[in-house]
Length: 102
Image (cartoon, rainbow, N blue to C red; front, side, top):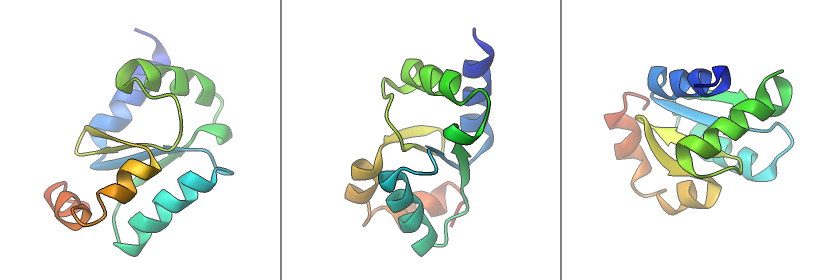
């Protein structure tokens, strides 16, 4: 298993909510904004600001079958991207509370 995949899986396992993002991405900003509105505790990994970001993005495609960002996991469950997160807006408070991230 690649080091990037081990790192990505570790981040997913160790954090109640993790957002794999790119700092300049408007969809990523929208997702983080929604989580901030809900006062969620979450970890952000800005793939464009770390040396192994491209390798982690490749690993995320293996893990989740999604290459695009944001790539969001709540309680180790793949949520999807911004449109998926926004579609779950009504359920998010309960999901975040269950994950211990509210």
